[in-house]
Amino acid sequence: MFLRLITSRLKRFLPWVGFGLLGQRSGAAFQRWYGTTDPGLQSVVNAVGCHTSDQIYSKQTPVTRLSQSAEQWRNLQLHAFFLREPRARTLQILGNNQKFLAQVERRRNSVLSPAALSKHQSQFYIPQLSAFKELVDYDRRSRIVATYHFGDFVYGLNELMCHEVAGRKRLLYSQERASSAYFHNVRLAFGARGVAADGQLTADQTSPLALLDSLRQGHCTLVMFCDLPQNFGATVAVKFLGRQARFPRGPALLAVTAGVPVLPVICYQHAGQHRVHFGKYLEASVTGSGSREVAVKRVAQSLCALLEEFLARFPAQWRYLRQLPGYFIEPGGDACRPPSPKENSDDTGCLLRGQQGAG
Image (spheres, rainbow, N blue to C red):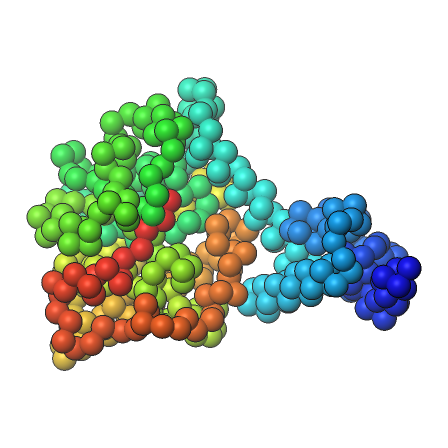
């Protein structure tokens, strides 16, 4: 009885809690809070975790519900703030993001039929394909393809690798081993032109020096992800969405250390097509009197700028959208400290702090 009394008082004085987790709100209250009377918005609220059904929380106390509601509200506010969107629009973006990622994961980790793969592959388009072919024919140096968990990156990157010159080593550095369904789909869709199982290097089985050696041997294309959250490894401070953020320093550090160029590549879906876009070709070298850390930050900033451009256009297609606020939190400890001047380019410890993988 006492708990029911507390709940009723909370509903009265905190109406947003009443809608979020402790009950339903009237249409007028819904409009005041979310700025719209769209009946479909409530389904979006449910999709991103702000449930309106008491049944889901029937075994929780009002205090627990209140705590969860406050956290959900805080996350919504933060996303709306960083995306510079109204709360209603932010909810729609997060709901669309959940649906988009579910489709990407299904095509990645479920065995697809040859017909389904053929249909999906036919939807990929590389607007700058002729420029890419000229690049790979002209520049035979090793390079790092710095990419993002954006759009259908799984099939987009394999589509790109099909246009590399014959005989070139193609490697993908990832956090975990891809599933057997993934390799089945890639083999069926791209044949020998895609990145095969023996071309995937995992973080737990590949030393940073092995990556460095592969690049220095020449004729190697190494694909690395440059948009990972802070818990994947060392970071560098960059400007992102108009403020200071922290992004992986591993791809930029490896490129500067090996003296190889970086090609930023991002995949996205638009107008019924899956497209592969290239950013500016970056020479990752120490110039003039600058230090290696200055070069690393310059490359990382350029990589971050491309993500920012496409996040503004297609925010629902980024895998780590829900973790966006975490990119602006300063991490602690030595894991992300900049290397000291005494750490040379072949220092294994330095490289270990700078490498991240994803998959």
